Image (tube, rainbow, N blue to C red; front, side):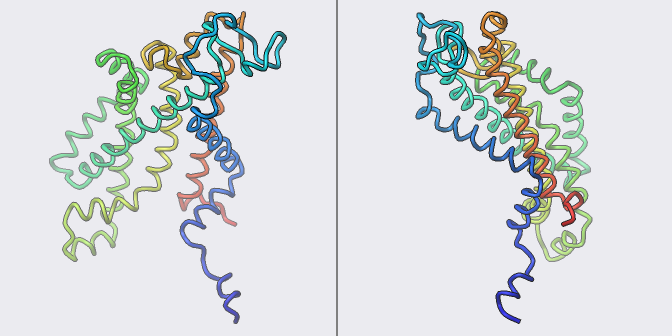
Length: 298
């Protein structure tokens, strides 16, 4: 049997197996491309934005987009109520919204994993205290909890990240604890314990790698929730403050002009909708690729 034929019989590696599972979901694949373009546009906002996002052109207030009657190629997506370029604000607002979402996910994921592992491995002393605190946080909806935190800390970009992260923390703690408890009783953990592995080695090198798949899926879905909560706080005037461009803040400032200039509301709203939808579809693809119970039989 030739070497080439033997290679075709070899099972795919982990990365190739993951990609095959992810790409089998066409919606997730399209969503990955769409989100990649949105993220790239936000990342390259300083190069792509035609104007400064806070620069005002008083002679062009509420100028329509280029395709509408009275539109100009100077402002492709029109201007807002203060004469600021909508395209530039959408691009720079993407940096803020995506940056807050990613920061909030990391700020809740890392301590959530640490607390969840601690609760799983120290069930007698640490678990009751940690889980009761998480139950208290879960008693409030995440957006309402974020509003409470913002009320205490005050509005602002950093405080928005902290508020959203606190609301997402209980989900990571409970998920990590449940996954870790399911793994602790398995043979490979017992073998590592018998071989002399310490608690910290068991936590981070033995159990945690086998809990990553559901955590990655949950993080991707929390990312979209964080973007929505950022927009919600901005819309209520509790998030990022003007004149910083952020999608929710743009919606809040434009709500008085919905009938006169619908593009100032439609464009940020569509951007949020497409971004969140793409992230959710990507999360479905990650779930199909990482969860062996949900992998499609080829």
